Length: 182
Image (tube, rainbow, N blue to C red):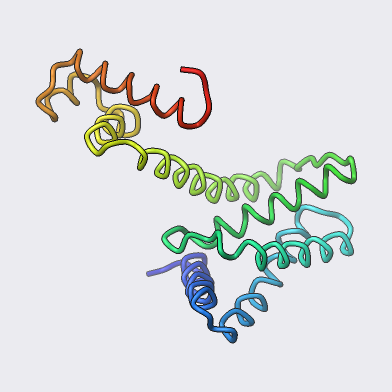
């Protein structure tokens, strides 16, 4: 049985995919469905209703201008919340205000981390995709799945030192790709 969050995700994603395919009616329904969602999102974070409404409009405009950046293989709401969060951060920077969260609202803050986790997972997958399959699999086994080097060596038929070297070199290659110093 699907939760209301899963149903909403599926409905919004379907509308977005249809909109990207050129369905203007689906796009109109998507924006209409997002408006109350965004109002609630910003109202929980701001005390002034006018500011929240401004952010809703700015976010809808950003969705419109950035819609081509949406990856249909990823959750729609994670992409949506990332845009809304950036608009909120920009608002706080411009106004010079700082936001504190009451302890009673801690659940709402941790619930938002789900979308951040989805974004991080997407970023990791995109980065891993730049590696050859063998290196990607080795790195996934040791660093993501938590296998020891001995377990990864047994699974791949490699020696433990070859696993260590392979993981180290893969990490160095990823660091170079993201602009760090290896």
